[in-house]
Length: 192
Image (cartoon, rainbow, N blue to C red):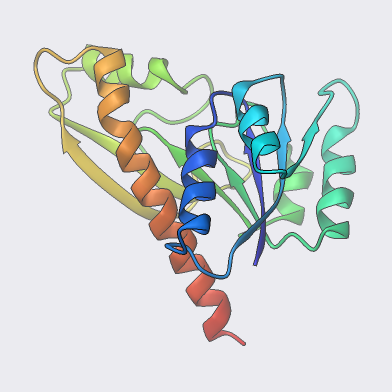
């Protein structure tokens, strides 16, 4: 199964997918390309592995162009791995049930527009939540509202900061991403 990974930042989730494909923890999946919406460290990670990388210009009809490129490459699944641009309704409809996202909270809590990165963790702390975690879900036209694939919880310590909580949740994101990709791949195999 060919996947495209969409990135905006450091690319630790991308690296996790790369490492797990290389070690054969994830079988049957190939990263066909990486799509970045800005210059970021994730691009260097893709370059090191000789994975094709495209940096989109968000001013143009980039989603239409990317759609055509993904179709040309026979990409079957898009993984949003810390991707900050919002995909439009048309793109989401064209790729219905073929885009997954990793979100650093227990959705439906702390999702939606403007909720990303440290902002999510700060909101969890400000609301004195006892637990947080990560969620992998299908992407729909409504931000962070698609069907949940997998979720994992962890306790929030009283002394937690947004940064320490982010560090605690990163490994959970990585685990969930790997498990989700295995699940989705297994489903594609059972339908053949």
